[in-house]
Image (cartoon, rainbow, N blue to C red; front, side):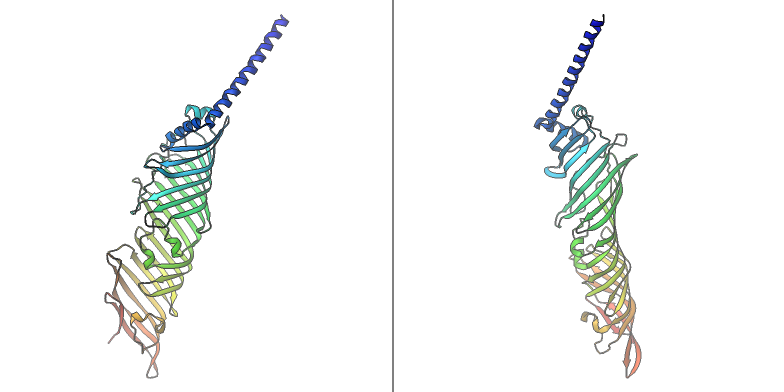
Length: 400
């Protein structure tokens, strides 16, 4: 009896070892298959079904409980156009998950990711975006490192940012975004936001920087910057900036920007003025710029501006301007101040700038100013002037 038990034990050992070898061989065989061309096509189809967009897997290495791969996502509307590429990705997905199609990882890491978006002339998103799964479906935590974004809009230079780190974490029916940007041109930014899961893909993304570039050449690349704004507003320097992008259900993106210049320089070609040491607040929403307490030095004095300035054609800007201590000798000749009455200019005015269909500006409005710090017949006097716009230039005339 003892002999029989020993013999049976040997058989069990042999069978167990054989089963383990067959299981290992099966796993190795499946892993090799998945790494083959046909296997990559199968995995591409699985991922494509999950995203609802075409996926091409170029490299794949699968183990018992994880997968390393390289892939790119294509735009269904333009199969030759890449939307998203990843140099290296990892996920807690097993061989069985990929074979059976149960691709529901709890954690995904993407390194060297690049997102390319196309935006229409009216600001509408042209690139197809994947649905972010229904709220009842499990969504993994996603870590994205060393990423870049490129936004292409017809008639504009590409908007490009690199050095992006982002985390996406599911929270109920939303995805919560957090991260940062460290780009050589744009500087350092923080990222936060929320995106609704499911097919609506609505939500918001906010980027903030305490030291962002304000030079016109850089700002012109912003995909939501109004066309032609650089012809009416030229700037240099740096400032504190907040950019909030609201993504609507119809896939349009509504930008809202707040800029607080920090000792910047602002050129206003329409007024033939260049302000230095500029501070204050600019709010950009759609095609309108709201100006709040914008103050700068010019002509030996200072100007403070408040108002709203539409950047679209066939509109009118209304600006409330306060001037203090402007040296008349340093003001533009087109203002036509009396050349024989030098002194300091103080006053207030409401200026209306009418912008026609071709972008030409016609100045209107009126105000009152006082020319001080000059002498008449050897005695100091203050001469009142009326400021008005005649549709071609701003004019000054003495008040009689």
